[in-house]
Length: 149
Image (cartoon, rainbow, N blue to C red; front, top):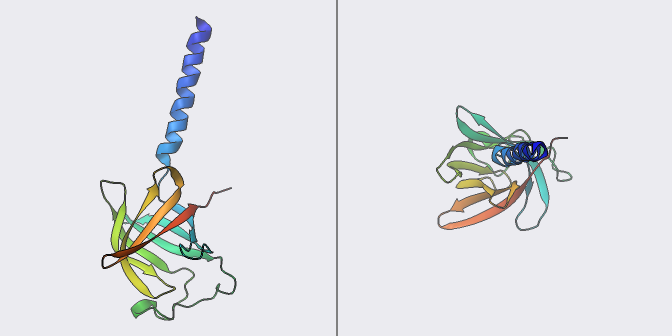
């Protein structure tokens, strides 16, 4: 009887810990960007919360020869600014579907700002789905969580 109670307690604790890890996954953290057309790894983006809203900035450029790239195609305050350190998502808001949506998602490679959304892949919490809209057309990239070691 004692062994059975101990087994149930251990099983319960392990189950809670396993689910806690699943529940604790969020979009916040560091992500490796992957181009949806070429499959090339581009950069590391840090997604963080500021004033209750989602923000993201480029913290490392992985493409050879692009470490010192400038946003030459950008307009306004981003024109000819370094891509490294650039804030590419600003003020995205979480909805009731666990998606973050906004109108200020910058693609520094093309110098364009899109409305878009992002969400965790439902079957793999280490994949982030990032979608940008241009009118009724859209593109979706899958980014990969950077594991802290």
